[in-house]
Image 1 (cartoon, rainbow, N blue to C red):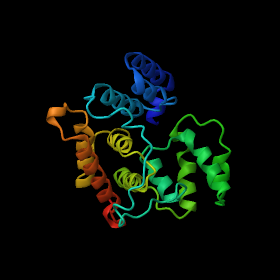
Image 2: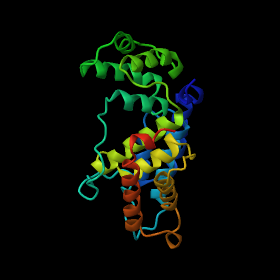
Image 3: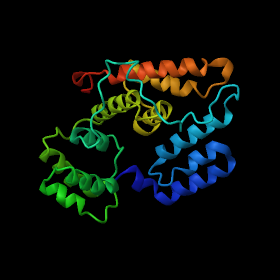
Length: 245
């Protein structure tokens, strides 16, 4: 059973509404934008971002730290590979095993794959699923779908998370993700504060924590931003054999 099914949508929405009245400005808007939180990590990531924005020293501009539109850093890191396509079957498998995709997401994903020209019996069946209560409901069908596409499945959860982490890093460098929102999502939603012994990943988590420190104890924002991008670039450069857990 997925964390979504265990925790319950109603409880997550109540938590969001309980926290929101105590926050103002962009922080409140950020939390309000989480209209369909699916597990504790979704709410934790958003609430943490809000608190960071609400209590930072105003001499540095944190107003849109997590919501600022991303820009490409490809010229700064020309050796970083481009991200995989969003509908890459191996990427979707990594997201599924990282719990970034849930059961209720998969009929839409299957429909998108069909529209993109993929066509297998399990894809057609999955796209037609109407009542998915949890990830467990569609796991056998999802697994069959990946295997029909020639994807190595299943793999270990650690390997899936590392593959998806590399994809997120490449998306940051390509300008498809906000770096601060990505670091928060990685640490909380994907890894649940428990990372692997990958130096770049550990440093990303440390910077994500440091941004919430008091100004006198942390590095300046611009220095943290530069270090964060360097770490994402290092993570993005990992070769396939380096993400096999």
